Structures are given as C-alpha cells and as structure tokens.
Length: 376
Image 1 (cartoon, rainbow, N blue to C red):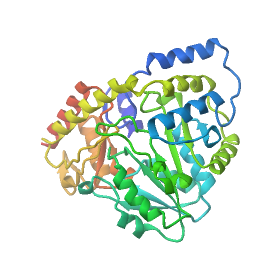
Image 2 (cartoon, one colour):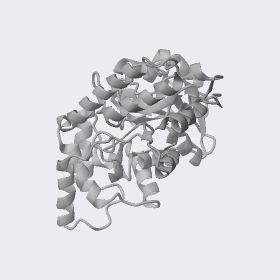
Image 3 (tube, rainbow, N blue to C red):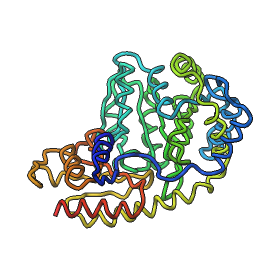
Image 4 (cartoon, helix red, strand yellow):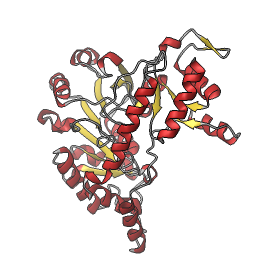
C-alpha cells in the first residue's frame, strides 16, 4: 500500500498516507548531538557484532530502570533494528517443522520470519470484543508437541491493545506446563502507552529463562532510520544470535550506537511530548471514525494505530467497485478517497483495516473527511 501510495503521489495525486508505522516527529536534538559528537570523535570503524560494550551497559540499565529486568551485558545483543533482533531469534531457535504461535492480529513480518526459518505459523485469532487478546484457553488449545515459540507484542501493532500483568500471568500459567516453548516479547511500543505502565513478560519468574525481550529506539525516540534494536535473553540464545548476526550484517552502525546510548540513558519524560500528542490524535481519530457508519472500533491503549472492523461493507458496491474483503476496501479508499491504509489480511484478521495516526491532526481530519464522504 505504501508503494502504491508513493506511485500515485508521483503522478500528482494528493495522497494522505495512514499506512506507515513511523512517528512523524524529528529525532530529539540531544540524540542528534550525541551522533555528531561520535562523528567528531572519529567513531568510524567496525563495531563488535553484539554492539559496543558501552551501549550494552546502557541497555542493561534501561532494562533495570524501565522493565525491572536484570540482563547482564552477555545477555544483550544489539542489531540493525528490532526487526533483525526478531529474525535472529527465529533463525537460531527454529528447526524445520517447528510450530510458532501467532496471536492475531500480529505484525506482518512475524509470519515471514517463521517461514524463512522453515517453521510453521499457527495463528490464534482474536476478536475486537476481547480487545484483540488471546485467552489462556485459546493458548492451551493451540499448543501441540511441535510448538516451539510464541510471539507476544504489547502494545500491539496493529491493534494498539495492551496486555495487563494479570493477563500475562494467566497466560504464563499455561506456558509453565510446557517447558520447551520459548516466548518472544516484542516491546518496541512500550513507551507509547496512554494508560498505566507496560509489563514485561520476562518479569514473570518462571518465564525469565524462556523469554527473549526485544526492543529498540525506532518508535519511542522517532529513530526509525537509525536502525538500532536489541534483545535481552538467556545467555545461550544471545550467543547464538551473535553468531548468526556475525555472518549476516556484523555490528550495527557505530554512529547510531553512540546516539542510542544518549537515548536510552535519558529519562522517559524527555519523550512524553510525543506520547501526549499521540493520545490527542488517538482520541481525535476515535471521535471522527465513530461517526462513520460501518466502522466498529475498540479503544487502543498504546502504539499509534486503530484497527476497525469494516466487514459491514463486504458485499456492497461503492463507486462501481464491489467490496469482497478488506483488501478491496483499502484499495477503494486509496483510489477513490486518496487515503492509504493497510488491509487486515496482512495482520491475520481479514475483516479489519489498519490506520496509523502518526501524522498531523489536520491530515487526520482531512483523511477521515474523505473516507466519510466516499462511504456516504
């Protein structure tokens, strides 16, 4: 959808993109200043595969401060984005035929990573009425002798849903019975949270030695292009990820690593202005979309997406286009309203579309006005 939107823009069409998961803020000045200092200090050589020691120490401090997790530097691997962190873990843990549980909706790359590692994806569908969260009963029913790994992502992309400590502990009560299953806890949106605090799955004592905590600076610090992610994991998994990465990309960019130290050591209050603005936008989008017939919404507690059920429009014809599924609906919005969204098919739930509100309030108002006018 992003590629098609760019193509239409190049043709002179006024496209509003609500398709990309990228903050529209600039990287904070104190982070940029750290990068400039690194350049002036002649940081220009290959870096250790698992990251500079100073950065891994900063990651360790961050885990302790924000997540109440104890990871020593030997348990931490820095990668070229959290995407590489996730891929490393999938590649080192999965053997051909291993099953991986994906609570749906899930970030699109999870399934691709499982396929690349020759694993088998097993989707666990959720409902908007359950705030897009799986139950312990669903988890138990999905587990087989071949289950090796499960992905958790909270706050979630694309739904914005957040698992509470109580909900995670209930799921852990199931997983404790299956000691051969590992857990990836993707916490990339941890600071973009509108109520309460994020709870890390690895804080559950029985799960610590089986959980890989994945994070990065792209979302919370508006550093998507800097490409820095990291894991905290059992040391044997960290060592395996280090070996894997050493044969693919080696160490992450030296300047970006030094900038990340500044980001992670900064108090979370430094990015509060972004989170506050995302909350204002969320409330605006929910208010405006609630007036559009056929959009069934929950209230996301984090990230910067809404994920409405739009199945009301299936079977209908709009502007001469028959809507059979969410992909048809997304293409309709792009071609007839000049608004780019993403089909829920990509996230494992085909009755939904994802809209990102990581753009200005004026553009959000105009985008939803266009959608409303088209659907009327």
